Length: 348
Image (cartoon, rainbow, N blue to C red; front, top):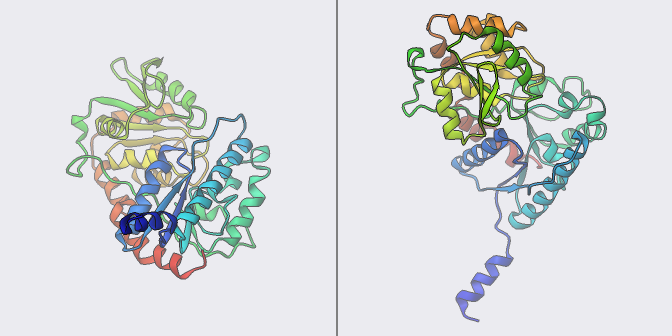
């Protein structure tokens, strides 16, 4: 064997050490965007990073079974990643990814299972989640609301840093189009129709719309959904954000919102956010209340009509100011100045 071939063979056998291994469950569009953003920020901060993404899992019937097969897939990915990269620290992207993790690590989460897996849906997840949270060297809730959900966990003393998912305007110049340039009355996102309250959105739209107005629903099959409502199908991110730049309002009616990246993207692209209060951390809800409290209410039809009839005003400009803590620059500064030092001086 030549020296070059011997070196190549040796390189395949020796793990490449990294500073941080991110264990990912790429089960939603939100997480598929969040994990690369975190890995990129760690790398920009000067650390070595690798991502161990869980393999796709089969569809199962219940939330308990879904969490189990996903947690097993994340465990397998973590084991392979640890063997390949010998990381100094681990970050589990979601509490589900951490449930069966082979080694304690930081947990980046939107909402704990105790919040979004009530009753029988979280019988085995909730107690195990408490154990993993207690063992974690660092917690990275996406919002202050996500952290407050742990307030009743008296035994948990884990250090925590709020780390929102970064959200940027999608316009090339960073400035959302003016209201007069928008030709779509309303847009909603409802890949999970029940969780996102699609039936409620469609009923409210049918009452509130005028004959020439159309609601587009991303994530639903292309075609008519009801009175003045059309599904767009599942769109690539670039096409979806282009629709946001054309929409005057974004309508949401979640039963429980763990984070709500779609609503934050809508605000970033200059849409007025009309939403029911919903449950869960849901940071965009508080931003929307600060911008126009009348648009955050149970009377969804009334709020839709009010938002569509409102004068242009400075809503988009004020939204941009409120979103400053969610911008990529703030995210990368938090990772470099606070998260990475905490990870590499801890025991994860």
